[in-house]
Amino acid sequence: MATDRPVWTATHVGRVRSANEDLYLVGKRMGAEPVESWSGTMAVDHGWAVIADGMGGHEDGQIASRIVIETIARSIESVRDVADVSTMIENANRKLFEAMYSGQGRPGMGSTIVGVVFLDREALVFNVGDSRAYELRRGQLLQLSRDDTLGGDRGRRGGHALTQSLGGTATPQPITPRIRRFRLEDHIGVLLCSDGLTDMVQESRIATLLAESTTNPAEHLAKAANDAGGKDNITVVVIGTKATIAPSVRRTQSSQ
Image (cartoon, rainbow, N blue to C red):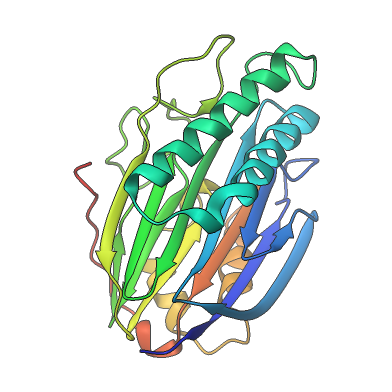
């Protein structure tokens, strides 16, 4: 099995919002510019990527996503199993509330999170909220995450209320991270994205766009979301090779 894979990222403020409240982490790289794209490689024997989509409006959303990503960055290298993921996410949630109580940001600020940790021949995918993770497998786009929304089984989620997030309330509430372990093979890739992509672009269209020839598939998807209206911040991370992607789609969700 290959020890590294190509990775592409893109983040964009969109056409409506005044600030980018999304923040991503790929290895040691953190991306938070209003508009940014990048490409590189990731070690699949122990690599990771995470997206946080901040909530609370402008500065508070940016504060929330940064607290989450910075907290995750300090511990994700030690993640080896489901219990480690749960502890890491609970710690990020606790740090958010500590920041609220200390006057850093306002009560109720919050963030969704989605991420993947590669562990040689396996991977752990996790999420809280409505940012998504997909497996890219020989022409199929398979949803690995599970939306924490009212009506979370629908293809478009704009306007649907979140049923859980990191922070997002005035006082701490119990959270149940969605965590899924799956077998990693050479032909499997992973797509992570904030809902700024999936609210604007249907999954079948995402699969088609991924199959098209482009230097940065993440940037290609972000452009499609902007072309469709760009009503929210858009962040995309694509990990894999062109061989993992073809224009067809199958959708399912974890039962966890």
